Image (cartoon, rainbow, N blue to C red; front, side):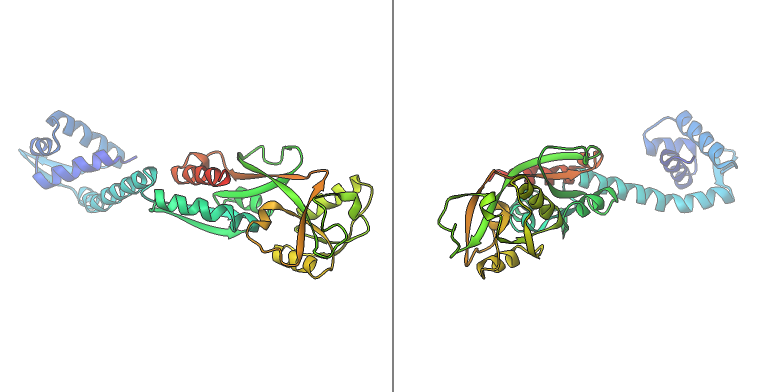
Length: 296
């Protein structure tokens, strides 16, 4: 294998015409130059220099290698500088995937802080709900996935680096004129006869499980991933719903009233990445800013 240090020696010999002059330019000894040239010729499998007295003349193979050496060494220098910039957070790219309620609340604050601290780091954002966002991470289509899960921690993310952010409680949503709208706390069983408006598939599954534990199966008349649409349907008196508190932080609840639901239902909000990616400076910095934004 041809090494970059050998190419530098060859280029110096070609430029100066002798081992001794090349040694002076490179700041090393003549025997060291001779040894590295022998190693390079061994790697190339053919002579690169013809020694005639005190002068050195390149063979055809030597001329070809010198011609390519400048481009190779320039490319290596550029790569080293780019890597140093990425490692020093003067450059870098992070592909972030987030579920919508986090995209409108948690993510903006985190990315604004990241840009202020590391303006050379670029972040792209795509919306996707788990488990699709987690699949994108495993498939290499993103670097960080914001996700959530309900109940006790399972094994679904055991192959990933999990950065816990916070716990999000689900709240009830009823029309302003509803019989329970004036209550601060509502037992979920008291909503057993209501028409329900459900959210994303994972949230819908959790809703059914919670309601069945309370002794009834919810009658789901509407299902939508769009939280403003859920609130609009509730506000129009078409049903009741439970939504994460995070989803209500950036949405007006016109025509609807929030109530605390018992028993409490929580979901865990996390940032996920691959173990190797967690060591990349730009990814680590983004995870740190997401964690800081979650505590504000």
